Image (cartoon, rainbow, N blue to C red):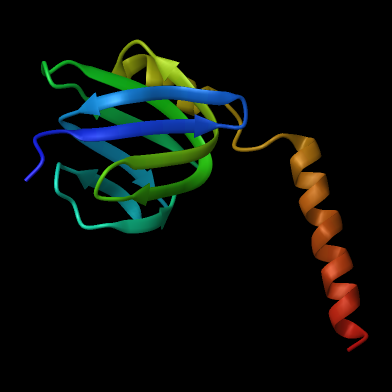
Length: 126
């Protein structure tokens, strides 16, 4: 059984984190998901926004505020694919950032509404 998880956090702008951790707490769309070495392979959707907690081998913790994405757990590596990963120096800072940052921008909301309207229009013609 592995004694650490190799984790890579990937955003559209590049790798936000890559390294070995003792444990990982991920904000999934179905609630917090705790991962330890040897976890069963899986794919899960991330919550629209949340705090990812990495417990390092030495016991200290690192925090990232995440926005949307997916988690893929493989035997050799765990991938966190996210729209945005904002590092925080501690849990309190991560909670403040989470509360102050919008879930999505107004332009994203407008694009979603436009796409939904187009899809509904296409479906009504069928």
